[in-house]
Structure formats: C-alpha cells, structure tokens
Length: 446
Image 1: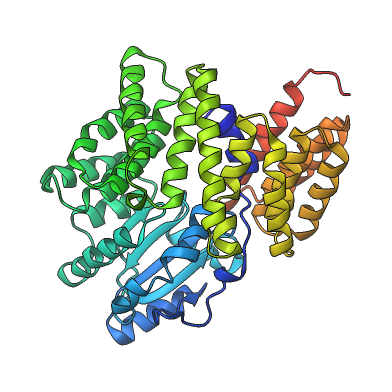
Image 2: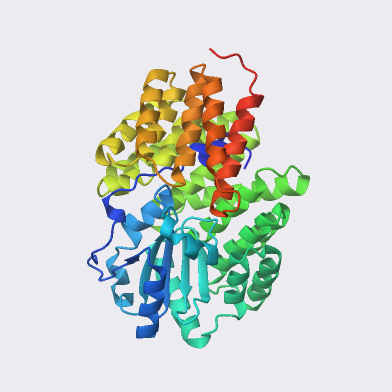
C-alpha cells in the first residue's frame, strides 16, 4: 500500500509487545500445551500418535498474533480438541526456525497450518487471525481433511501447497477451481477466498483481487467471515484508479461500514479495529479529509473503550499499533502516548512500546523524548524486528537534523543482510524503501 497510513503500518507499527502470555510452556485450562519452535519434535509426536499437527506461525511484533494468543488460543471452548492435534508454535523471529520457514515460506502473520506428520504435507492453511468460532470450524474441517486425504494433494490442500511454494499463479487457479466446487454457504469459502485474494495480489492482479472479493462477499453469511474478505479486498483496491476499481472500492467500503454497525458480539476487537483501519485508508486515498478525520475519531473512541474492557495488560496492548495509527490520523499523537507508556512499564523487556513511543513523540514534536525512546528500543531489539526499530530510529535522526547518521545507520544495516537469505528479502525492501525516501527528501534539515 502506498498511502501514508499503509507506509506507517509497514515501517513503524509492527513491534507489538511480547508479553508473558506468549510464553506457553505450561498447558492452560483448556489442556492445550504447545511445542515451541521445534518442528521436528512436533512431527515426530504426530507420527507416534497418528495425529495432525496444528501450527501457529506468529511473530512477537504481530498485533493480530498477540490478540489470538491472549484471547483465542487459551479459550476453554478448544478443550475438546486438545488431544486431537499436536500443537506447535513457530516464532518467525527465532533463528532455529529457518528450516521450517524454508519449507513453509510465510508472508502473512499469523498463518495457521495443519500438517500430516509423515511427510509434513500441508493439509490446510489459513491466513490471518480468527475468532474462537472460526478456529473451531477450521480445526473441524482440517481434521476431516486429514483423515480423508492423507496425502494432502487434492482441492484446497493442493492450492495451499502451491501458494506456500510461491507458485501463486497456479495457486490462484487452484483456489478458483476449488471454490467453484464448494456450495455457496460452505464454511471453507471465507478462508479459501482470502487465500485466493492474497495469491492474486502477489502476482500483481490487484483488480482481479477486488473483483473476486466483491463476487464472493454475498455468499458469506457471517459478519466475521465477511470482514476478512473486506480487509483484503479493500487493501487491493487502494492503489487502483480506474472507474471499475473506484466503483468496486465504494461497494466494499459500504459493506465494511455495515459490518462495523453489526452487533458487538459478531466481531472480535481486532477484526472490528481492522475494518476501521481499512476504511480510514480508503478515505485517505480518495482525499476525503473530513470523512477520514471523523472515522479516525470514531476508531479512537472504540479503542479507548476496548482498553477499558481489556482483561489484563496483554489483551489491552494487542491494539497498540492501531492506537498509534488512529492518533496519527487525528493529528493528535499525544492522546496515545499514555497508553504506550503504560505498555512499556508492563513489558520492560519488549522493544515494541518504546519504538511506538518514539514515533508518537516525534509526531508531537518532542524530539529529545523520541530519541531516548528509540534508543531504549534499539537496546532491546533482536532478530528481524530490529529492521523496524532501525527505520524508526532513522526517522528520529532525520528529524533532529542528523541525516548523514540516519543514512549510515540504514546503509550499514543493508550491508549486514545475507543476499541469499529469503528471510532477509523483506527486511531489505523496507530498508531500501526508507533509504530512498530519506535521500529524496530535499526538505532542509532543522
């Protein structure tokens, strides 16, 4: 996405806190004990017990992952499934997971997989966060597919495998063929369509992504399923300026507004908040400044209410990225600063809150505080998450008139990346984009 909101999200808003709820060595009340970051051990357990392996692929900077870990995966409603899967969590920031990520490349967080344990073949794949009810449905479908198709090479499983292999043109065709065979109200349609839209977007077919979102939307009866399509479909529509695209974008925006008016219990907090986000993005690209401001203010009131309702610091901090974005869109960074300061106190070992604070302080003109917060984040960050923190630090340096130091920081980081590593490709794109923006900014330093 090329909008200011999209760039802010891409470059600065990924560092959600990794609080205590993300460490799950002990089984919670629902009896589900995750194997952490040990793919081979999980497959071995699946072979010994003749069970499918459920994989949660997450990252500590991913707010949707954080929300699922805090509110969905510990749910008592999952208890009947505890002994019917082997449960594996893969943190994409952990170096020892490199072999897993080579076998199953990930470009969406969270990604949920179900594998058959003999060969590690993909039985099913789902992109993005789910509610408890959506996850229950996904587990039932995956368990059925596991027992019916142990090779995992038919229908949706084949399409998922193609997408994971990066063969998105073939995957898109396979998804369309599978969707053509599913009844209109089949519960698998939402997940399959989201995967189709992602494959179309990956191959540059943004207008086809929008068309399919509009086509499939009427076939989904549940608001939570419709919200998944709306988020991806509107994302595809943001940067296409044709008459057809504008008409489809308007249709999807109206559907998103209807979803936001749905009863509270029909959407999880992250699902509703993501709809606010994408509607704001639409209004930004269409130049509707009054509408953008009004929607951002409504979004902020929602976020404040969710903070009051949150069951603990982990659940409250799950929407910190959206607090940062909504405050920026209102041009009122100061309103989000107390929440991020509170998150930093709650999670003192996490670089996410001080990194977000640096951005908010900078927007508020508090350059010294921005520098101090950014330095605190740099002292804590490790792994691929460091790219996002470095980008934020470069922006702070530039604002303080230290452009040469900002360029050196980014250039040194680029030199350290492994040109042959697929994991480093995304980091390289972010660093190069930021460095280009920095060099093209001819505004005199203060």
